[in-house]
Image (cartoon, rainbow, N blue to C red):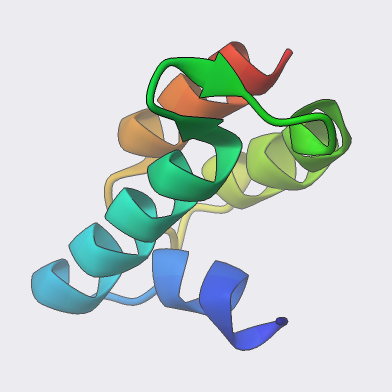
Length: 67
């Protein structure tokens, strides 16, 4: 769903925070890394590198867990 990664780049703290929470739940669910999680790492790094992303450091957590 392309709108979910776009929400990570929102300047609205609540929108970006909700998207990050959803992302964490999708990448790491109850301590288990999902099988598709490593495929998300390049996209998360791209999102974290974008200056317009709110809470860029927070996006690196799921990227590291996925990798």
